Length: 396
Ligand SMILES: *Cc1c(COP(=O)(O)O)cnc(C)c1O
View (tube, rainbow, N blue to C red):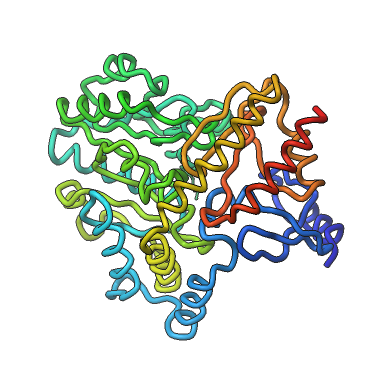
């Protein structure tokens, strides 16, 4: 099918929940993708931080193919080998003791919200249910997670919203301390806010939040759906800060393109979930978990993260050079391969021009260009992306 034909079908049959660009991607390899006309692009969107190992990574393709031939799905009424294997890899490499599997980031956060409430009610009393989150956060599109999301634009039109969420400005410890009330049970934060404009938490902020949580008996939940799994240059974003949360949520990169989410919790907290308390039919399905195992084993290979770190710094250095060159660039922020370039001008036109020149990027908050390429993007591809971006910015 041509791009035109695909666009016509989309227009006719798909709900308009996305403002889509006039592009249909049909093939990918590493950090490159091709559209229906055969044009090639460098993919610095990476399926929104999902394609962290690049498109069609052989380890993931092999694992999925092999598992599809063996056993695609059985119920969680039974024990599932790839699920147990993936849980062990996540637990042994994190501060958590148990995993719950689901299919998306929003579901991982729903699970975290339910676990935090259950734990707090059982441990500290029936009146503990409130979760404090940050302004400019993003936690998903279900009713509970749009409510957890500290941005009104995601909530409008869907009221009444579930009760029990409160928002504070990010990186403001005094505001958090003040917001804690008699009903508070947990604090939920993204160590690096993604959709909110690529805002990294300050070191002293996360340390302070952890201290307050410990003092007041609150659970600390890190939403690492976007910033986790190597995105910041460490396997988990919390490891960049040395601040250990009680609960971690994951999704995007976990399946190397296959849909899967996970909620990890420390053993003591995880105990609050008993048989029947929470479930997902597809959650932890053999096929998804086989993909997850392949991703984790690849990311855990000796030297993988060191390479991500070095390449991320190299890319950021070039973005800083561009920031110095163009006075309409306000700031370059972020960590590893979760980088943002805030402009004084609208970003949409720049995104479209980059696409014309063969580079896919996206824009959050109207004016922050976001770069989330595969973690194994090659140096030459980074150079080419910088060259294209430089050319486009020079004509603004
Ligand atoms: C994308 C994202 C989510 C939601 O994940 P879905 O898989 O779209 O439900 C939640 N939290 C953060 C930080 C995200 O970036």
